[in-house]
Length: 211
Image (cartoon, rainbow, N blue to C red; front, side, top):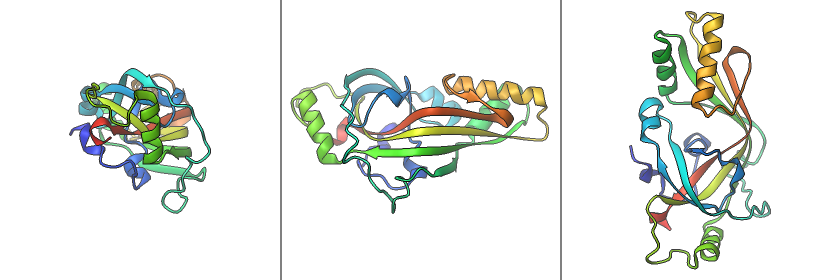
C-alpha cells in the first residue's frame, strides 16, 4: 500500500478512516494545522503492524495556530464535541505482540480518542503555502515527500489491549510495556493493558502532488 493513495482531498469523511490515518514521528503535538514538512512513509512499521507512520525529516514552515475559524463541525458536529470515539486498529498490532511473546496472548488492540479535531480550509492552506514558500505551488521547488498538515486531532489517545485467557498477570505487564515502547515510549501505562497518551496528536496530510 502506498501513502499517496490518501491524498485525494483536504476534506475527509469519517473519523474511523481519517483520524488515525497517520501517527507521526517525532510526535506531532508541537506542530499545527497548516505546517509544511518533508518526511517519509515508514514501510517497516506498516509491514509489521499495518499502521501508517510518517517520519518527519524537515519542517519547512510551522504555521501559527489560530483556533478561530478552523474548528469545523464535521459529520453533524460529531468531531467538535469532546466525546469518546473508539475504533479497532489493524490486527497487525496483536500479531506483532503475539509474535514477540511467542503465543496467543493478545486478541486485539483498540484506540479511543477524546478531544478536538481542527482543520483548515483549502483556501487557508493555499494562503499559508504562499506566505511560506512564495507561491501556493511554486514551480521548481523540490516537492518529493513534501506535505502540509490539513487536519489535526489533539487530545487524549488510549490504546487498550484485549488479552486472551492464556496471558498471566506478569505477561500482561510485559506486553503493555512492549506496546508502549513501540508507540514511542511517551504513553502512561495503566491497569489491564491501557496505554494513555494524555496530550497527543494525529494528522491528515495533504501531499505536494495535490497542491
